[in-house]
Length: 60
Image 1: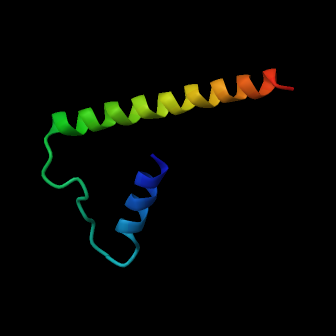
Image 2: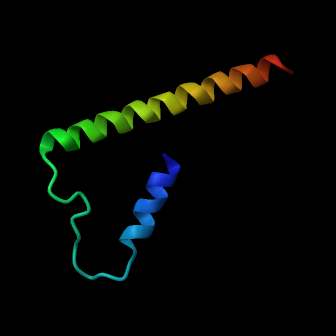
């Protein structure tokens, strides 16, 4: 996930003065599906962080 965000930031850059459509010609449903998958991925990361914190707490 982090790599995708980093790649997006690096690909956009600051050299162009005109706005760029990074999404290309995707449909609204494809964009909605991407956002759904992104939210799902973020929720899984939150849950993994909580599980890791709980495991580390129990090892003390």
